[in-house]
Image 1 (cartoon, rainbow, N blue to C red):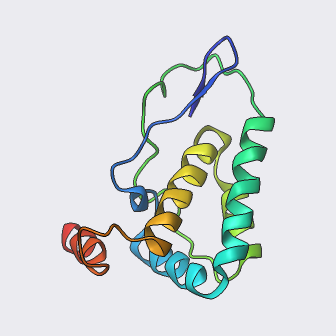
Image 2: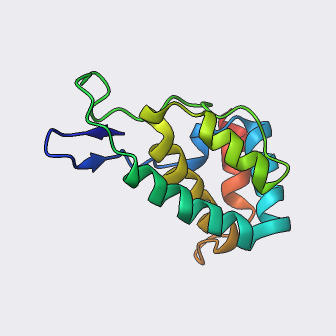
Length: 129
């Protein structure tokens, strides 16, 4: 994420939102969504709003148009409370990117694309690692 001098936040859309998570963290997030989907969704919506409310213009422009590092989140949440702690621990530079990626992954989990089997994206990601 970066902020332009006029205060506008920008993020980079990730073709595979799970790339910000390590494999164990992704597996734990998927389990959590299966167990507490509504609470996860509510948290992610609030976390996104918090990111926009806490905007700071940064003179460091070396991250402009950069995606967050792969595997940035390496701890898997077992509860929404732990998910909140994990997201809070992400450096502010990448926090909105991580929240947006988790939101995209959440939608992928609860609403898989209709044109391919539900298990295919997970299989493809596992073969890429």
